[in-house]
Image (tube, rainbow, N blue to C red; front, side):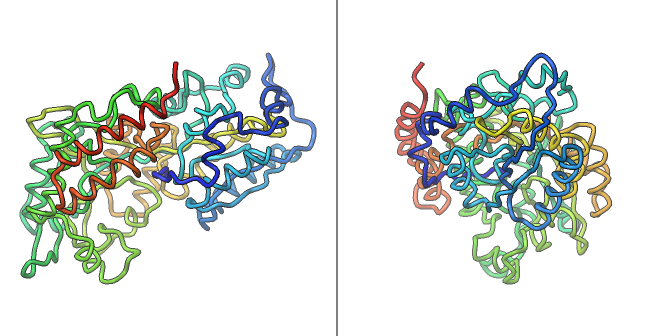
Length: 466
C-alpha cells in the first residue's frame, strides 16, 4: 500500500529525471533489446531480470510462488529479487536506476508512487505491447486502469486496490442502542454529522478518561482530512495530470472539515488521545483499534491487516463512508489506495520484462498475490474469489464484503499516489500546521493562512513549465 514517504537520499540526483541516468542506460532506454514490433517476439536468449520485493514473509512467499509459475513458462528468463522494506525501498530503487541496472519488476511497496518515476521519463510505456499482443484490459477496474496512464500513455498495470470504507463494532452499537450505519453508498442520509453523533453516544469515560472510544482518527488518515467535508488539498485535474494548479480550491470546506475533526477530540472527546488508545490496546501496540473491541467506528482499507479477518470476540461490520453535512453539501470525496506493477526503461530485455509484468497481473498470479494475502485484486473477475476468501476467514457477511467492492467505484485515487510531489507538500507544508490544529494549538483558519502561500510556492516550483 503506497504511503507518503518522501525523503530520498539520491532525490537531488533523480529530481532532474532521465538525465540522471548513465549514458549507457539512456542508450538502452532509447533502443531496448527486442522492443515492441508488429508481432509478438519470443525471448530466446537467457535473460536475468531484477524484481524489487519486500521481505515480508507471507508477502514474499506468495510473490515468489507467482514468479515461480512465470519461470516455469519461461525457463530462460531468470528473476533476481532485490529485497527492500518500505523505509528503504526508495533508496534501493534509486540506487538501481543510478547504477544503470533498473528493475524490470517494481511496485510502490508502501513508499513513493509510480508517478514520481513516470514524470521523470524512467518507466517503460506499455501501449505498444498491449497493441502488439492484443492484450485485453477490460477485466481491470476502469478507475485503476485510468490511473495507470501518465500523459495519456499506459505506464504500468494495476495490481490491487484498497478502498476506503468505514468499519464498525456492531456489538457496541447494539449495546448502546445506536442505529447501524448504512451499507448503501447511494444513501445520502448517512452524513458526517450523524456519524459523529453516533460516535459521541458510543463513547464511555471513567472520569475524564475514555474507556470506550466512539471513533479512531476520523476518515482514516491525517493526509485525508481535507476531504472530510468534500474538499481537497488539490484541484480535480491534478489527479490526472499529477501537478496541481490550485491549493485547497474548496478552502472553507477544508478549513471546516479539519477543524471538525480536531473538535472531535478536543471538544466532543469522542476520539481517544494517543495515550488513551494505548490503554485501550492494553499495552499491545501491535493491535489495531478495531481489534481492541473498544472502539465503535474505525476508518480503514481492507487488506492484509489481521483486523479484517481474525476478530471473533465481538460482531463487526463494514459500512459506507458518510457524506459531507449540509452545509457545505459537497459530494463525498473519499479515497482508495492502489498498487501497480511497473518496469523501468533500460532493462536487459524489454520483451522479457513485459512478459513478467503481464504475468504478474494475470488472474493466475493475482490469485496467489495479492488475493492470497486477503487484498482485493485489480481484476473484476476475481472479486467473487476475494469475497469467498474473506468470508471464509471472518465473521463478515455477503453484504459487508459487497460494500468494499462497491467502494472501488465510489472513491478516487489517493493524492499520495496521484500527485507527483504530494509527499513534499504534505510532509513539509501541510502536516506541521495541521498537527497544531489537532493538538488544539491553533484554529484551522490560522493554519490555512500559514500553509496556503507556502504550498502554492512549492506547486509553482515543482510544476513543469509548459
